[in-house]
Amino acid sequence: MYAPKPASLLLAEVAVARVKPGERVLDACTGSGVVGLAVARHVEGSVVTVADLAESALAAARANATGNGVVLGVVHSDLYAAFEAGSFDVITVHPPAVPYPADGDWGLSQGMRVATDGGDDGSALVVRSIVEARPLLRPGGRLLLLLPHWSHLGKARQALTDTYGAVEELDRLKVEFFPAREGRPDDRLLAHLKRLAAEGSIEMTFDGPVPESVVSVIEARID
Ligand SMILES: C[S@@+](CC[C@H](N)C(=O)[O-])C[C@H]1O[C@@H](n2cnc3c(N)ncnc32)[C@H](O)[C@@H]1O
Image (cartoon, rainbow, N blue to C red; front, side, top):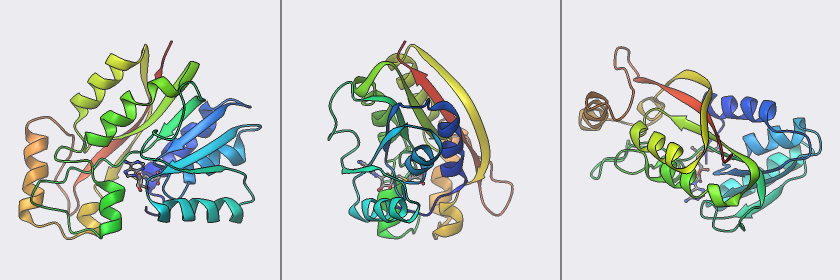
């Protein structure tokens, strides 16, 4: 779990704008709970559950809810496994999406690895979070996905259009690829990113001291 980043705050802002009063919301991969907390605090009558695999994240989300005087359900879950079909009007999710080459780890701490590891091309949890959300949504339900463009974009877009009736990008933001600032990436790791960018799998520029990319908030509707 990690402290909210610009991407986290973008998803929180969009979620507050898109969730309607009284809706049932799941914030999966919640980390500190920032997205779920923002919705519960600012959308009247919303009923919010937050979930994560990491106990440290759940403890932080509970503490942040208490500290902000917000009532939330806090549930331990591997992605959506703890929830029944048709439970939510909206699912928000900011999945781990960093491409970890098989023989490299970006030099981040173990906790940051769990919070960020998206497999070789960054898409493993992104694609699962798209496809496995669909059965949990009620009629008229929406997925609000924070999609980092440092994970395989073609796979994410294919999963979105294969699974949902309507897909729209609501907002986007240029951001630093933070593992290159917070970790200890060497030339071999950067070469992995450059290879993915050159083949068009991810979007990243390498002009400054820290690579830059984009994050999008995608709304996917089942109708
Ligand atoms: C990119 S962080 C996002 C945190 C927070 N939502 C935010 O925007 O700041 C991803 C979160 O997913 C959690 N996570 C990783 N694998 C998971 C899994 N299989 N099931 C549920 N949560 C998982 C991590 O513990 C981490 O808190």
